[in-house]
Image 1: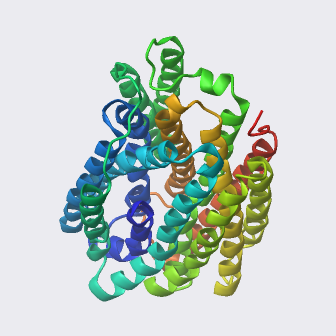
Image 2: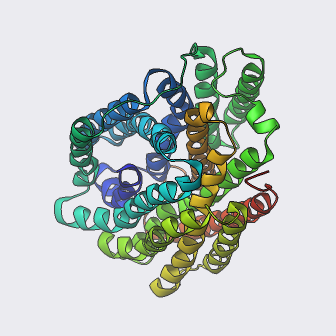
Length: 438
């Protein structure tokens, strides 16, 4: 449900932008604003879940998803849609921040990799069907129907959990919630994204400095707090934990903008239909879904570092292929590049997640898995923040029409080269992280 909520909308953006007469800047905010609230709230919700119950927070997130899906589908303007997507990102933080923690609470360490691999495969199945399903639904029932897709799934999940999933999972003892830290973190990350959309204007450059100051204040506050949202020593004293998270953040910074960028490229520049666009982008998700359970199970027996780093190298090869993109690149070539990237991410994600949860004590599982998801979403946010900056610099408030397709293609190519740089650094950090049993 989560990747379906996040990714299916990307395919519907050209149709929505045309009907609502939205400019390139507002269109680029559609996938970004979801991530802003997700990043700001995922750590606080992970800590709350440890205190009051992970299943309880998970189910509240599902119910909020239903409400926001209906609201976005009925919104009369792009600004209204952005409002509901912002709240929907917070709902996603409730489920993403607790799902792996529940799984990790139930499975012993020697079987956890396989369980996390199955969870990753479910995410990738969502990523697999999201573009194709979003394209088909957009063509048949219109772009508003895409926003409705998560609602029946969330209703079904709430029903199944209420009937079949008994019990609750939380930390052994409740600790005071760090509201100050949560507010500082939310303000810092939100201002960071807003500032990136307006650079190099002076006001936005100043805002960037303020956001970086708030993020530094958050780190200082967490280091000196008796009951922090996250113990900063988990990063400074545990190389396996910190390098695994940094590697994940960079890999997702490269991956997340791809659906957005290629959706624009295929529908505008290559004039493909939404359903045909979804089928091309489908290749990445198929490869990820096939390999995630296998690589997760393998990481229970082989060092996660070795499998994950191999995946990074394969992703690098896929991005090297995509870096050759121009106005005449074939669908087959793009699909092959995405399939290669999907294989690499399928090899990387489950072992990397297994390394993260294996690096901390059981009492920190909720915060650790929330931090793991935070690293992923921060990567997504950084990736889309840079894309927003490029869109603003190259296209600004222009509507995407044929006269500007050259600028659009240049923007996409630059973003892909930047993504390749993320992957190279992520590969290095993955190789240097250390052993899971160290």
